[in-house]
Length: 103
Image (cartoon, rainbow, N blue to C red; front, side):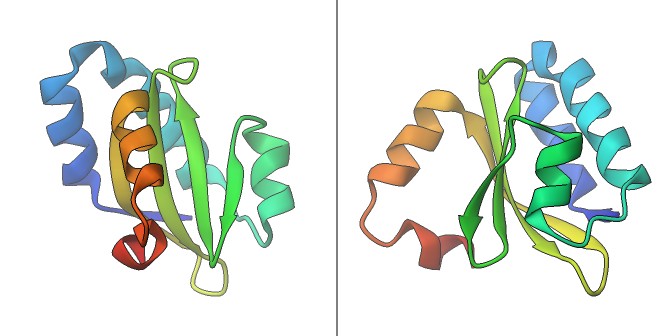
């Protein structure tokens, strides 16, 4: 998969240095993968959860951080739409139209 928004990862681990190692590991898994379905993502990253509409939520560092990404299976691309702490993720999920903000 081609991972878009690498600068987003770098900016995040600049704010949260403890996340860097885990984000680099996640990036490696993404870039060597050729996922065709959400089930394949779940097989390689068991903590990942499909949110519908091509959105996948990835738990980072034992659920301390979350990434929500659009996975474009036909074009083999992953686009990060949200990265934040678990509390920030919870705040996003509490918003009425969170899905529209991410797509």
